[in-house]
Image 1 (cartoon, rainbow, N blue to C red):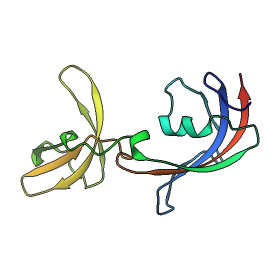
Image 2: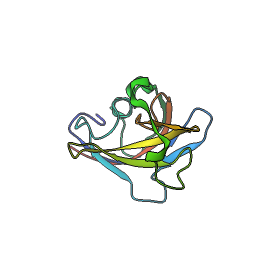
Image 3: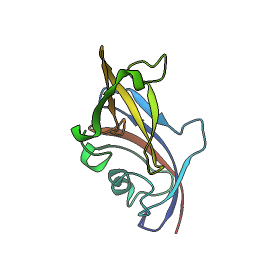
Image 4: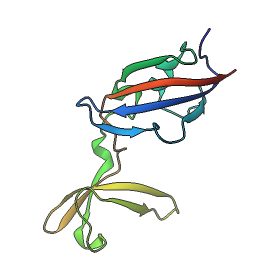
Length: 140
């Protein structure tokens, strides 16, 4: 029968980019546990594990459209460089607080003479992701 929507699944995973670079893994840590269909993980990952059985291993690619979506240019914006904290470098992550109290994370994309470009896209946006998974447990 295998994994179906509503099941609580425990698994180990390793996530890689198309060049083989690992961006995240549960191996050597606590396994990932979630309810299939509850929106806790990316859509493409859930779709790929449906039907898998305890002990089964699988390698699959999740296209960016079913992962973190495309890079959205409207989520990149320039600010005056003087607004950056001291010592900030390209690639650093910063917390941005909005007037309404909401907070979001941005990556410093570029620093120029007078301005800096910040990117609020998810770091994995626009990337196809490869996963290797091993199903450890399924609770229906």
